Image 1: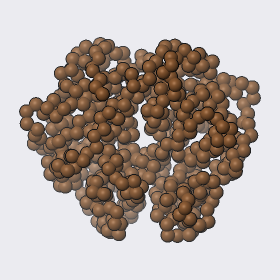
Image 2 (image 1 turned 180 degrees about the vertical axis):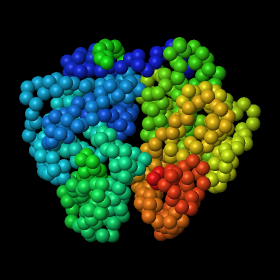
Image 3 (image 1 turned 90 degrees about the vertical axis):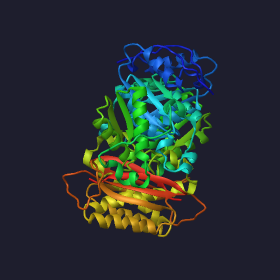
Length: 299
Length: 299
């Protein structure tokens, strides 16, 4: 294909055409006024503080849809800890500026809490066939009910063809796939690979809360996962987890919450390495009182 | 700032307004027709086969300029090996589609060789104060003359305010800063951090040429750099390099070309760790006959 050069004046970025919706009614009005070409809608649900990981989800969504909605909403019902909710980075203006770099088919839905939670700010109860009792579910009571609640609401509001989630929150991804399957929701869930900073730290909005020195040293988390991956082939699973635990005990900068080697499908801890299944190591670590999670495919 | 929702029809992505220029004259015509707001021009020089690393450079450029030119040109004069040049991935249509995800202030300059090299396809000779004799310079004779030649030509054609380069090619970044300083070119060089895939492999167009299994196992390269970083504080520099060499001798999937621990400024190998300077470990590795490079800050 050849695109012939077009000559036209342009305004500086701040004047870009860009759609920001704070109310679901206005978002729906917008969609009802679209022409027939808007057949595929991609949703990238975020809590803002956008980083390259989010950006890569948005690019994937743009390449597979006619229109992309980036939702920016720090969902209170998925925080089991008020301090974590209060301290979660909020950078709406910077987020808007980043989305402006995209074409006009990428729009933002950044609602107030009332727009999403019409009545009580409360999570529904979900049954994710036990996925919700593993790892993050154990350590963050109610977290996945909150996640299920907001994602379901966003699906009802945006009615996406495809929805994009990063594998950094791998358990969340599996739980949303489960919800969609059990409730037969008409949306395709797309999992996208983790992106990492130069030192190997998994991209996360929470990284902004780390002290520069801690952020630099946080390469230790992924380094330990890589060494665990090496051991996985040869050592007993429990021994690998034990080795990781000891490695963190020797490092005063980071406090290990859990290391678990699980079956990717069931998220249940495995005791032995059957090569018929896919395994992943999952880790949660505190650094500067910031909680970081990461994971790595083992085979 | 509040952006009120605007209702307008949109066409699917394939019909986006997007400017692709194959001739420098047309690019210049375009700029000469721009209004006064186009004061800051950002240049992201690439050889195409765009990946998230490139995308992050483009986002940085969009955030700091009124207009961004992404150049896509596989520069023959920087390849010291014809087979490497022939096998370098070329995916112009996919690259164009990725750039279409950006707003209309991001344009592509994708010239034919003749448009850049008016007469002979030949590299000029540069003096980079010795930076060109280290590492990549030793192993890729003439490479940095070719890099200097094309980057200088692109600066003359695009006249950028800012130009963006990834730290994955850290020696290239330092060499371009040197060229700009020595020749007093009116452009600001912006170095941007490496982005990594989920397994730690540095983003590179060449990764596309790896077999899936090799790409998975390529986490070994960064893993080794992380361990070298750990040792750097405590062990003798030569011992660290020796350890890396032995680690690669034990791994049949990868062939080490070099590991060097250098001063970030001079790129000269260091013999001892003086904490007054910044050090980096640089590595070049062959995998599936694909040459991969990476580096890591050590302090």
